[in-house]
Image 1 (cartoon, rainbow, N blue to C red):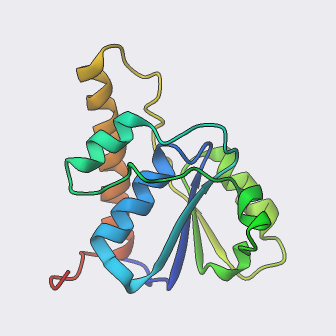
Image 2 (cartoon, rainbow, N blue to C red):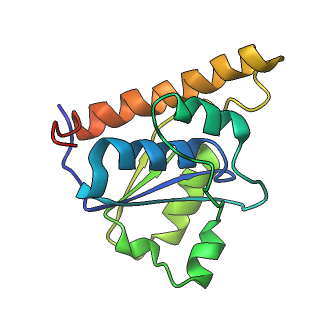
Image 3 (cartoon, rainbow, N blue to C red):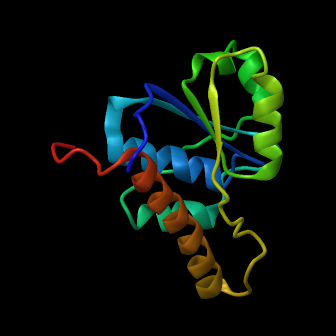
Length: 153
């Protein structure tokens, strides 16, 4: 049974270059403006991954304009993690950082163990297949947690 639907969600992972941008894009595609959705990473040391862009395009999710940002970047821009109803961590390091940064805030932190596809395969087709597995893990977990997308878009 799906959990309650939050009004704001932050997805986070290690670099904000693969998993958390995928999750942000999928959430926006499936649920539209039903929730405010952002993503961040423990570090901001990579650009959006081209394979992540490619496999999300297959589902009509545009990621090419995504700009990676870290938890530190969020603080510098005045974004308070406490403003989110839910933080979904997609890596152990991001879960730990989210928990550390929200000790005094009333925000739920969930950990979804999602495979990091980077470096998982050799060759373009094998890499795409690995990234699809990650994308589909996120999609399936999201649909299980938040329910089916509204029929009216």
